[in-house]
Length: 432
Image (tube, rainbow, N blue to C red; front, side, top):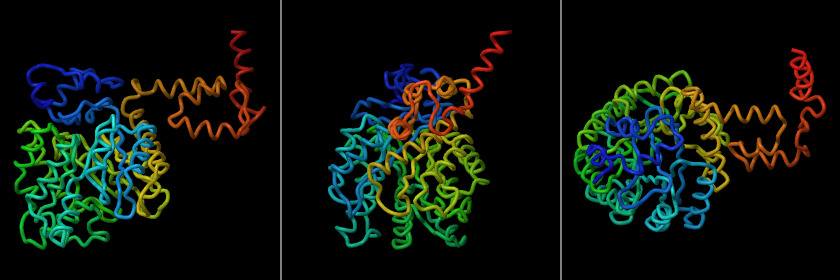
């Protein structure tokens, strides 16, 4: 049985109760939201998740970390280091985007060692295998696409990105628009090239029922990918992006009718003045489906700092209603990230997610910040370290400042504002 089947029988399983921990909603409310399709709890029925999470309406904004090999760097040990960095930094989910080496072994190792939901993009492996077998990605057979999806599901993957909205109609919009960056989604590019070469419709769209069958078999959550997401801020919110979104909205309805959990992926590179409208459109067109965004990145000119750029966009998107933020690392647009890049990306994205949570539901989420503020006022340094979102970095910086408990830091020293005013406010309050 799938999670939705169980919930329809009026039973709230353990996974829902565990996913409800530290959330503003109780298990019964989350269960109803899963049934209505505005929340998902990704969990393949072949495995038991140690740290399940709900993604959707009124819940804490979740953070995903992408890891995976490339053709140039393909070490399982290296990926396990990155997985550990992502988990230590607090990622709620990870995606294995491997394209090099023994892809099957890497994926299975990630699934085995990850206590959080694992996602993949099976079209990557299908394309690589087609290149090896047929000499070209565009000669991929439809059966090979679906076989790759089931292969990943059979290994215990909890959610998969499937670019079902890359259609002939959306491709025509792209060709008429004249983008700067054309297509930056790897899966989107593979399928668009396949459509052009074969002069046929995208099999993942045309035979969507087959995809639903696989999803039901493994209780696999579908993440409807945005193959035409903008890869330059000038390309944001164009006809190709919106046409794809309209298609995804129709497919969300088919998922819900079939009892399949589904979320929708979003842009991309988007200027700040368009982010809220992008989220509103996605929510309206998809009937409130959980919205999973990459960034968005709010400017194109900051290589080396794109994790910060994405954090800015992620905050705005999450405050506007996005539910799931995919991190970006400092190496975005430059190269394959390492463990420290992964850690930095997760922390920055968690900061953005928490800042959005504060704005969306301060009465529930403000307690953490309030306690930090109290400890700062008291100059209790160890307590501040315990409360820090990245304790390791905070402790490293503090260790160079040579402070003692209840003493000012090296920024202000004896001229600490809080220490100074506490003496006068204390005496004044004593008089009152």
